[in-house]
Amino acid sequence: MSGEWLIMGGPGAGKTTLFLALARYLGAPVRAATRGAPAHARGRAVTLVDTPSLTDDVHPDPAARRELARALARLPRAGVLHVVDAARVGRASPGAGLAAADLALAQLGRHHPRYLMLAAKQDLPWAALGLDRLLSLLPGVAVVAVAAPLRWGLKEVRWSVAAAARAAGPRRPPML
Image (cartoon, rainbow, N blue to C red):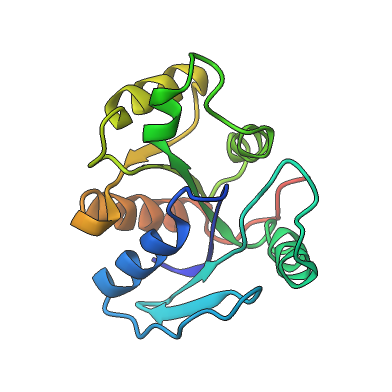
């Protein structure tokens, strides 16, 4: 794994749980996040950044808005681990489980060389159906199933991120 990786997604998707699980899996020290500021874990040539939640509306917290703006400005240079609550997608009526912000980030991911969608909460009911829906709704988007509290899928995330970093190599940022 190499470079900076932004952990992004909507409220309650499991971003911080994944951040902590992945940082521990990599053996990285973790500094706790403060409200509105990203937490960082450095290990094995990677920096993980736990970002504030993406919302379809303006975030109510000004500090979170500033941190999110900083994260979005780093998108051309950073990798993206896009966390989606697959159980929520599975429970929703077909086509209604993803917020507009998640859909927009997934569309960007189709053209970003270091993007990976994480179908989180695979240990919960409805998550398998949510994973199937994500795969059919977003063809061409790289998706890995994870259950961070149980460490399911973390090895696959590490492999996918390492492969994306090798494939991207020195590159120009994608056009946004």
